[in-house]
Length: 244
Image (tube, rainbow, N blue to C red; front, side):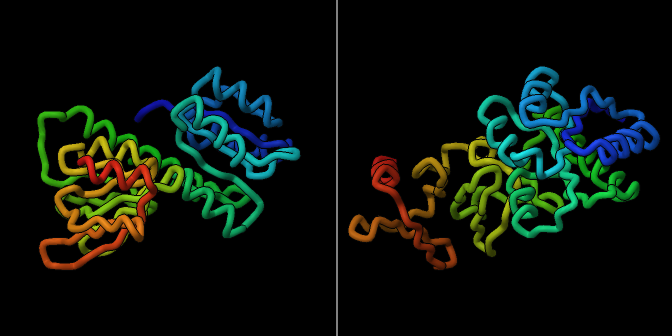
C-alpha cells in the first residue's frame, strides 16, 4: 500500500485533533505533514510540502477552501481532495464535484466513511499507475474518471467535449456524461488527429463536423447514424474549425 502525505486544513481545534487522531489510529500509512488553521498558512504549507491528500474544511476564517483550491490550481496540480464539513449544502457539494473531490464528509467524520474515501483515492492511484506502467498496451477505448468510477469511451463515440473548470461534459453518441478531468487531460487521451480545439473550453470530433453556420455561430456534428448536434462557437472557435 502506498504511503500518502497529507495536510489537514481546519480552523476549529477539536475537529482538527479528532481527524488527526483517526488518521493516526486507523490509517498509519498516511503521514500528516501539517495542520493549518488559516488560509495563508494552508497556502504556504501546501506549496511547500506538495501533499498527496488534502483534508479541507469548507469555511476557513473569512475564506473558503474553495478559494484556496482555485488559487492553488494556478500554481500546481491539485492533489487528492477530501472535504470535511458541517455544511450539508448542495452548492458546496457541486463545487466538490467540480474539484474532483474523492469525497465530501460531514463532521464529525465517521471512521467508515473516512476509510471509504481513502480507499477511493487508492483505487484512483492504482488505475493511474496501471495505465502508466503499461504504455505498450493499446486499447480502442480511453478511461475517464467519473464521480462513481470510470467511463471507457472510444474516439468514435465522443462527439464533443465541453469543459467547466476541473470537470468536463462529454457528449457521446449514446448520451452525455460528466467526467472529473480537465479538457487538457481529455485531449491528450483522445489525440489531436481526430479532435480539434474550438476554443479554450471546447473539443470537437473533427471527423463528425458536418456543417459550419457563421450566421448563428455554430457548427453541426453528425454521427454515422445520422444524429445531429448543434454546438455554439466563439469567433475564435469558428476560425479554428474552418482552418481544420
